[in-house]
Length: 206
Image (cartoon, rainbow, N blue to C red; front, side, top):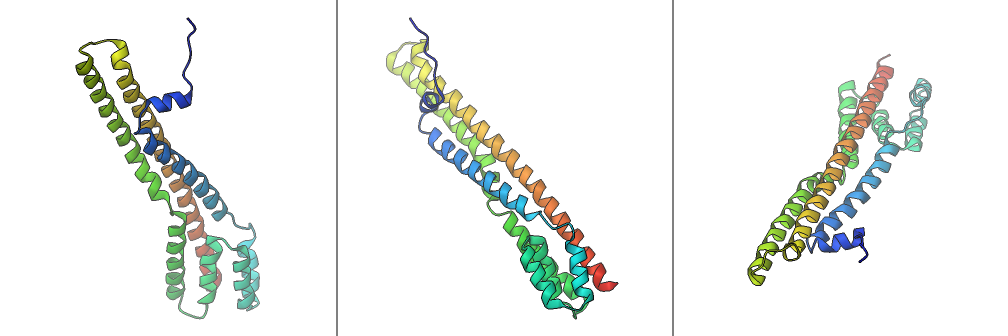
């Protein structure tokens, strides 16, 4: 008799209906991970000579060109600085306050959909636990119906129990790791944003 191995699809089917929401969470998590990674990676890019170029335009008193330059660069950091350029002529505190407001809005954009990953990190293992309970119930039900304890009787419930638990944990760990990794990258963008804003204020005060 030939031993036939189970492929991933067959194992997933043996996990029962609880694998449907776990699978959906997995697909959505992967999508948001990739989408956020690309978005945040683009957000932290900034021309190396951004501040020197901006300083040159401001030294000439060409505020319109300075704003146009920030708009052309078009990153969260440049949009924060653009707001500062727009407020030139007002007290430094007002300029800083305006830039902080824009920085907060830009941070909100960076954090979009991260809440889903955080939620998935908690829900997926719980769904796996529900699958475990369902598998155990199935085992005892089959035993009570057949009045027989054998590997064949309990195998179906064991499959459901182990597969859903494993899948839930894998999806949960994946979402948890992605959530914290992406948050660390957002922190870097915020740090760069603050550093650039300080350099801009230094230009105004020099």
